[in-house]
Image 1 (cartoon, rainbow, N blue to C red):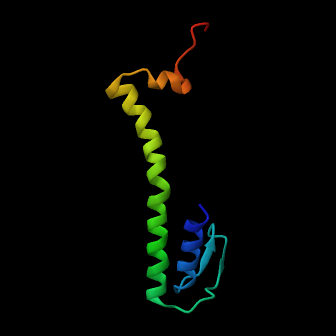
Image 2 (image 1 turned 45 degrees about the vertical axis):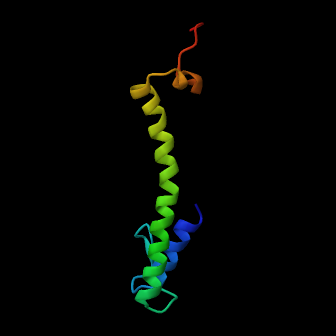
Image 3 (image 1 turned 90 degrees about the vertical axis):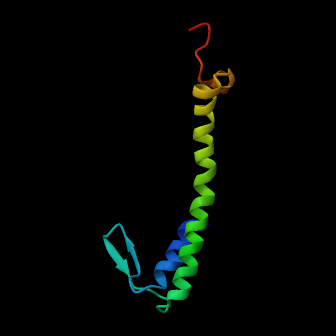
Length: 86
């Protein structure tokens, strides 16, 4: 979670644009403009994006699969079912 924004910040600093904070102000790039370094950090950012979003997607899809396709009682054991007292 730290590596993804750090890689993007580094990629931006090795481009001609620099870092912009919410379009309020811009910091000039502190690195040289080098397309190879920019692509390296941009690729690292994209790989880390996949590494971060894949487990999140699996955690969202799996309960939906158990509820809609398998129709087993696993979703109820996850705490989503109403209790008998309610």
